[in-house]
Image 1 (tube, rainbow, N blue to C red):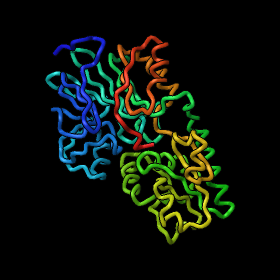
Image 2 (spheres, rainbow, N blue to C red):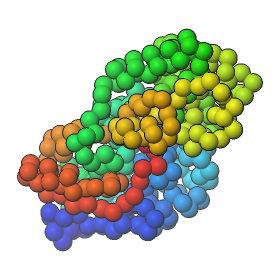
Image 3 (cartoon, helix red, strand yellow):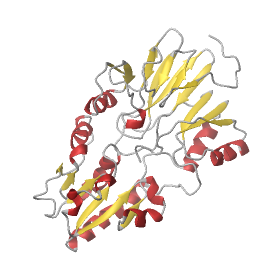
Image 4 (cartoon, one colour):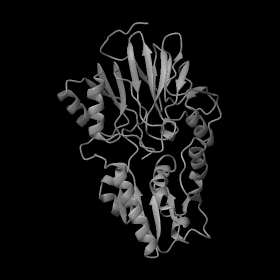
Length: 336
């Protein structure tokens, strides 16, 4: 196997989503059975196969979460840092710090090393296996969900302290604190951040089984249970996705204070758009500055930018650092 140009990666974009590495016969977060070896980086819907009966490789937590989300195919489970050998490549999964089980996928070929991030975060989410990255790569395929300098995250401790203060103040004044966050990943980060309060938390029904998987894999989430209309307003904290804003579930709670938790909460306009009381920009994605620093550290032949609404700013700063880059039109955003 030889690459035709050592400075460019030989790839194809899969219809729907995902990337195919034809020389290695590997698919990365692809929709269908289009390569011999298909890897899933994590269990968010915009990275899962739409063909629910194919064979894939993933970490054990991702396999468990995929099954809860309706995947019925075979999953060969791989531990982090333990490579699997194929005819034309060697593949290793590295902890991505995004959600439980999330992995970056390293593919080693005769043409060079390829590191595909899926979605990732450094410093890692505190309810993940952490973040570990190879020291160098030849081709870096990175998401850039937040591709502008306005996206610079506060430290976890600072954000969690603000969230705990919001919850206790609301309860002290007779309101139910409601945190809006995606059911997989964000809800569990919020629960982890609120756990030191020792207060009862109720979680949206769609997130309940997902939380059980987190605890099954060693990440306790505090004092929590499934949403119950009869007791939801009895001094409890409620965590639910923002899609529930106009649902009977929230309309039933007359005295509430609502916080939106997402990297998109960076935008003050979200307060008015969603009619919420507070914005917490807690993201499970890498921010703009961390992305640039990681690219400089890895110093690849080329960076390929995916899952982004605007890659041009990232390209500009990479170019100033002497790093070649190219956008790949793969859509994302399901998870933040």
